[in-house]
Each structure stands twice: as C-alpha cells, then as structure tokens.
Length: 151
Image 1 (spheres, one colour):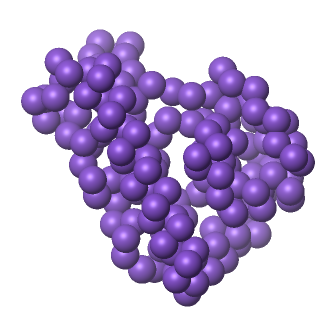
Image 2 (image 1 turned 90 degrees about the vertical axis):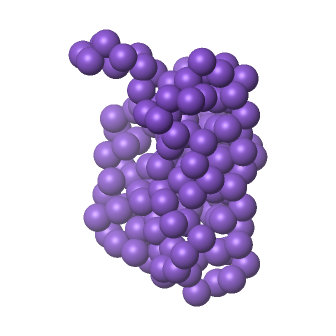
C-alpha cells in the first residue's frame, strides 16, 4: 500500500499488480485497473459525489472541451503503454495466452474502459480517476483533483 499525500487530503491507494491470483478459481487472471482506494469512508464520500451527478457532468465537460478530451486520451494511452511494459517484463509466459489479451489491447484504457477515443467520453466512475490521480503523479487529472477538494 502506498500512502499518498495530496494538497488537500491524504488517502491510501493500493497499487495492484496487473496479473492476480484468483484463489477461488485457482488461476491467474488479468487486472487492467492498477490503483484502488481502500478506505471505505473515502469511497463512500466519492460515491456521494457520484450520486450528485458528477460522472455525467465530467463526461459532458470532457466531451465538449477538445483540450480536456485530448488530455484524457493521453492518460489512457500512457496507461496502456505502462501496462504493456509491465506485462512483457513480468509475465512473458502469458504473452500468447488469450485470457490476457486485454492487457495488451491498445483499445482498453484505464480501468478497462474501451472506446476511450470516442465521444461522448466515458467517465466510468470518480473512484477510478481519483485512485489514478493519487497513485501516480503521471496520472494526475482534474477529476481526481476535484474529488480530493470536495470530499
């Protein structure tokens, strides 16, 4: 677990590996989401922001602002590059296994979001963008910044 201290809040973010062991099925499975917020209270506060309609608000704002749209596409592409690099370095034994193709798919971005280059832009959830914002400086973004200021 990594303790991340932002300008507004300090939150715990877990950096998960892209390949995880599924105890129940006793197999390795792909995990395209690398950052998770563990604190239940923080997650609940973020959920309350979602209930107020901020997912739709951000989706519309990003879809209508070309510079923001381009910015978020760049974040998705950065994540894809990072995920492919990690996968090839740590898990070459799974390169030809079709179960893991999602980790190499250049159309699957942050959090498994597909079609991220299309409008309307899909803000899957505020938790996801806040976790990435807090988990790695290279993924700081306006959604995560907003959430940290408003929880």
